[in-house]
Amino acid sequence: MNRWYTKEKRLEQLEDHVSATRTARFGFTAYAESDKIHRVNHHFNTIASRYDLMNTLLSAGIHYAWKRKAVEMLMIRPGDKILDVCGGTGDMAAISASRTGHTGLSLVYDMNRKMIEQGKQKFMKGVTFVQGDAECLSFPDESFDAVSIGFGIRNVTHLETGFKEIFRVLKRGGKMCCLEFSKPDNPFFRFLYDVYSFRIMPFIGGIMTGSKEAYTAFPESIRAFPLPDELSLILREIGFKDIIIRKLTNGIAVIHSAQK
Ligand SMILES: C[S@@+](CC[C@H](N)C(=O)[O-])C[C@H]1O[C@@H](n2cnc3c(N)ncnc32)[C@H](O)[C@@H]1O
Image 1 (cartoon, rainbow, N blue to C red):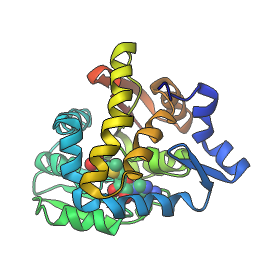
Image 2: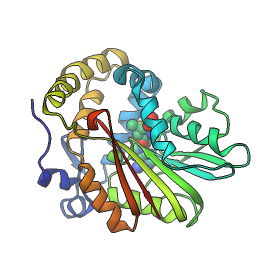
Image 3: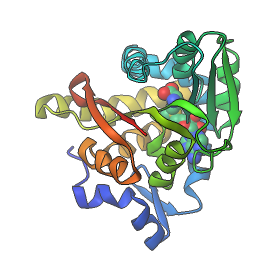
Image 4: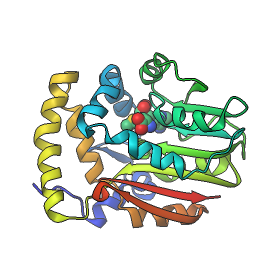
């Protein structure tokens, strides 16, 4: 049942390896580098209509608390301009919008049309949706006071490019938070989490969305992703400073907050 990747394998998610091999993983399966984005898009097309419900069901609602904690770390003030990259149906952007007030701006940036449409149906006050690729943000340098990315960077083909884009559009002194799944610290808890992830999650996912595969690739991608310290190193190399790691629910989810 132990399917957690070794460090060597986890680091295959980084751009050097992706460019050298021209392959990129989505879950445990390696695809052509140029195909991963289409696989990811297909995945979210399949689950978009049930995305919010599935998150709440599979996490027993805890994902809202995780998202609130991540946004808290941005220390948003009224009037701020906030970008939520890979923002999906807009949960984090909605929390940001409640803090920027009507003088600020809270944007969701996501490549998947269906996820955006689901988000728009929630009629969240003060949230604007923009469609585009996280590897090529359509904003000038230093446009935002803070940028969030929640459960998104794992899906981006060139991980460092995604973070470099966030760094580029942040104002000097601006804050970034990255909320992502990771490896629970406690071995027994991790065992239970593994059983849940590979036995129960795909089963519920299959019933609810019709795609067992989507909810198999999802836990796989978590196990292939760099651990918090490894991610910190990447952020530091890009130029982020004051990096703080905050583990949630025994490390199932982790927030990296940092400053430009
Ligand atoms: C797991 S969802 C997270 C959504 C939201 N942040 C949340 O926490 O509920 C990941 C989102 O990232 C988007 N995404 C994945 N790769 C992307 C890319 N290269 N550019 C923009 N969006 C991307 C997907 O379309 C999807 O909506």
